[in-house]
Image 1 (cartoon, rainbow, N blue to C red):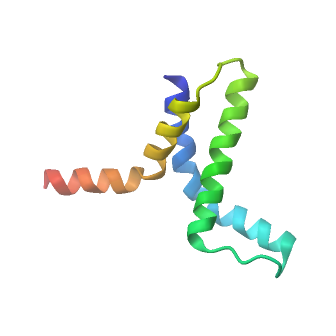
Image 2 (image 1 turned 120 degrees about the horizontal axis):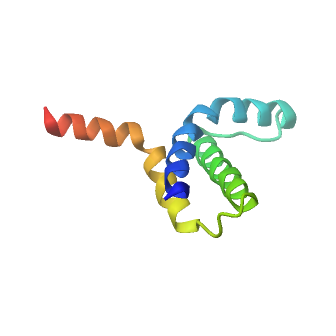
Amino acid sequence: MLAFLLAIGAGFASRIVQEPLVGALEKVLIDKIDIRTEEALALSYALSLFLLTLVLLLIGYGDPGAAILLGGLIGLFATQIIGAIRKAIS
């Protein structure tokens, strides 16, 4: 359950770290790489969940793969899910 809740946070945070991550990559690689918005979001999502997995494994949580994936997806699309719920209620 802990992995699931943390993965929701990591999925939500992937949208926040998207711009700084892409900016840092473009700064390092200058004109060698062209990163589109969709690719940047996928990269930040994968990096966020990878870091969460490393942290959970270091604290001895075990293998929380499915919970991390599901929680991360919910966190990534949290704003769209909440918007859909609000639209359905109204």
